[in-house]
Image (cartoon, rainbow, N blue to C red; front, top):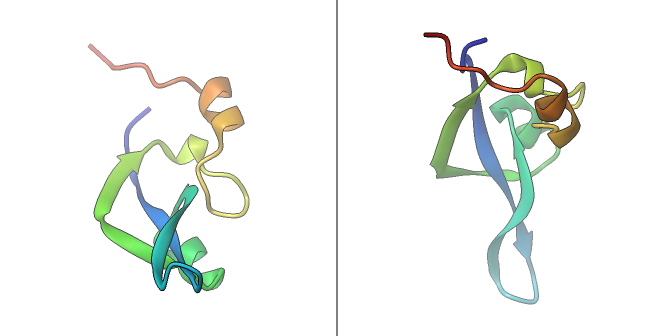
Amino acid sequence: MTNDTEGFYAKRFDVTVGDFVLTNQTGTRAAIHRDGLVIDPKSQAFCPHEWINDRGYISLELSQKHPYRREA
């Protein structure tokens, strides 16, 4: 398993704060844009594609089902 999928923190605009705030979701560029959210560019990271759910976001359940093991 390799870290082959780029992921970012998703942000949304909060009118009460007047700025973008994190959504507690990490997903692919396509999923974040599709859902009308904004990418936090400083949060770029990579994960195994097995951890990405059908919506394009990292799933805790999938990450536990497919734990990351470093190859020696």
